[in-house]
Length: 202
Image (cartoon, rainbow, N blue to C red):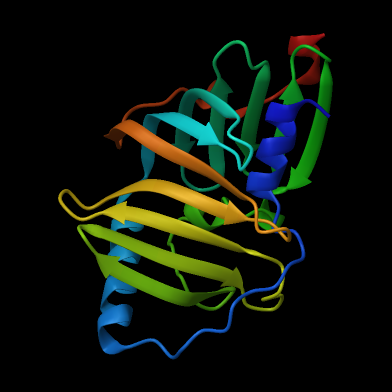
């Protein structure tokens, strides 16, 4: 599997690993979680630049588009030849160079947290840690029913309050990150951005 595609699988799949023990959330922690939920609910659509970095120092960049519910698109810039599309049901990985396509159920991926119409960081998911300092809010999240399947960390800037980055840690402790720049909220996006047909890439 090509390295950029492998890195994205590492980013998207919560592989089995050990999740650190966590203390009970304070009232301030709960207030920060509510703040994050309220912000994420305002993101009906957005587009942004992204920078992906894996644990080995591999770097890829491109453009990301999102439309709730359930739709997202990552367009990698050359030399990467990767396209990733969430169409509301599947997360589709396409390697343009090898002409290979892989599909994962969207609900089985961490990015699904961001794509729900109404974001709730409770119930299906559990917040294990909240860190708020130096103008940054970090919220660590696991799957409630399978807490040992790794974790995703959402990172927000304080002023302005925006989602700036997310991190996924795999079973070996390796971290893949996606950082966002030039964020434009609630913009008009063409529906075809969130569709994928194999015939278009044959």
